[in-house]
Length: 79
Image (cartoon, rainbow, N blue to C red):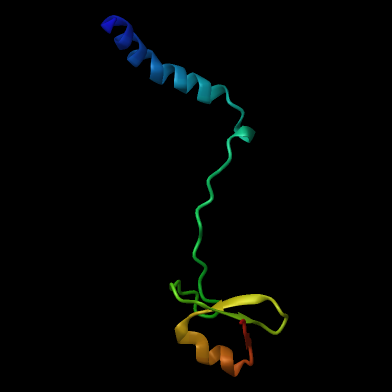
């Protein structure tokens, strides 16, 4: 019984490597980590970003340091 367990412990990594080698890459889904976007103006990455609409109507993120600049450019704050 212990010999069988030892043989299985030796063969398990080999069998897993063989299975992973023959699996098609299209079936494996890549894991996407959430990315923290940076400020549109200064490119700094902070936790508390304020969303604004730019002149073209697309959403941008502005850090707390660049809020005054966004207000001067007459960007509309998202509510």
